[in-house]
Image (cartoon, rainbow, N blue to C red):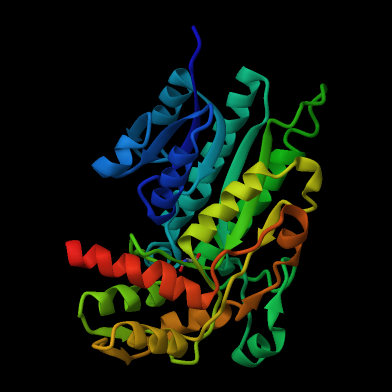
Length: 342
Ligand code: SER
């Protein structure tokens, strides 16, 4: 009896899940989509998936059932508690972000033992794994490369950084002392994403959320009090480029990859510059700046920009959108349409 071959997506109903499921379902391919999330998927998203499961990545019973019914050849492990939310419940964040990832890595190894092929394990990491001690150092640091400032100030950042290590361990060193050398069952690949901005969904629980929140509020004629200073600066990216990066990295030939984890960048406006563009696009926008010093502190510890030359060199990373086209071609028309319909 053959189990159904699938690509498994956890956190399927989150922002990245939405974008990824749309793109994967359009691109077709030999693998059906199996979506897992703690919430029921929207009917539109559900229609794009062959199978859906409601439940947590910490539910061993559910994961066992999943192995008995499906044969996962690729995993996009997107489920996580983001940086702000994780600070309210750090221990729960650890369980979800680390425990959930460990469960999925174990599942992927087991799946690979069954079907004899390596399971591609795609893992979104984040600029939150960086921790820069103060603003003067942040300014001096400029474009930060993958090996600098690996001292995160948040539980989420610490969790993601550790999971990058777990992925590398499972890919390259798993059970290294076993008598019989075991074939690596997992091909773990990870991207450190900047803040992502989608025209179709709004984030929840992150600290880069001020950018998408500001734009979506303006489009709905709602006032928005930005929780960081006007000069706060971190990298951002249009969601379609983020999804494109995940798929590009997944498709890259293994011999082209010199790293397990890659930075990617697109643009890095200050919060004030985002407000300026938002006001131009939505002249009635009511944006004020009321920094929350604690959330501001988290943003200050993240780099102002990232060095993504390894991704550009190894797998041809190049964002399709710069700041201007993100606003004028992707965000503004789609957001306008979205709220005009609502
Ligand atoms: N967008 C995420 C957050 O703000 C960063 O990975 O938590």
